[in-house]
Image 1 (spheres, rainbow, N blue to C red):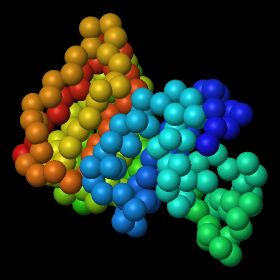
Image 2 (cartoon, rainbow, N blue to C red):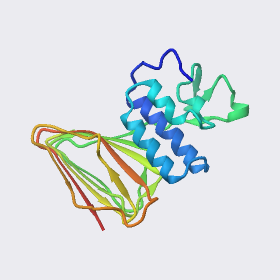
Image 3 (tube, helix red, strand yellow):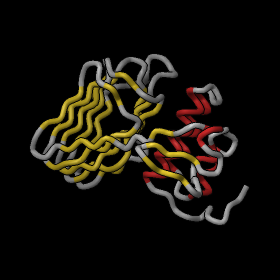
Amino acid sequence: MESGDDDVRVGHPERERAIELINDAFSRGYLDIVEFEERSGIVYESRTRGALRTVVVDLPNGHMLFPDAPVVGGGQMVHAEYGAAKYGTRQYVPAESVTADWDTQRRKGAWTVPPRMVLSGEMGTFNFDYRAAIFTAPLVELHLQVNASTVKLQLGPDHEIRYDTLDKTRWSTLKDKAGAAARPGGPVVQVTGSLASMSTLTIKRS
């Protein structure tokens, strides 16, 4: 179904909402792992509302992608057209921001991985160990906005890493030493954003 705003461009908020919807559909059994991976890849390549709509058009929660009249209050989002009584409420979880300017940020052990994280800073270091982490969704986004910084990711045997939309500028480098996941179907870490000014992303697995 075409809509009058299909050509309107989308950004991170719209893509994040689409990922939340297909995560929800996957967890409820409406999508299998292959369909989930295909659709998540389309989300990150989408540039317009029309392209995003194709990802969720056949899902029960697809109507929530671009709600016309959301009612916001107390941290909850209720779709006004259908009502909380029928569809319940959606808890809005903003992206977690982590900043490292001339210092180091670490995550290790049984830490909870949010659906989306934004890493930013200059001359900083990020050490994120996912091996014992608790994933809140089958696909999580790690958005980088770093300059002259070092990002180190440690994956578990079943974790998948994607970085096909990551931009590298001004002598920045990506070192993927992880190889393929031991088994399919594990959590997916989608790295987006940019490495700038001689930044380095190193990925390992154990």
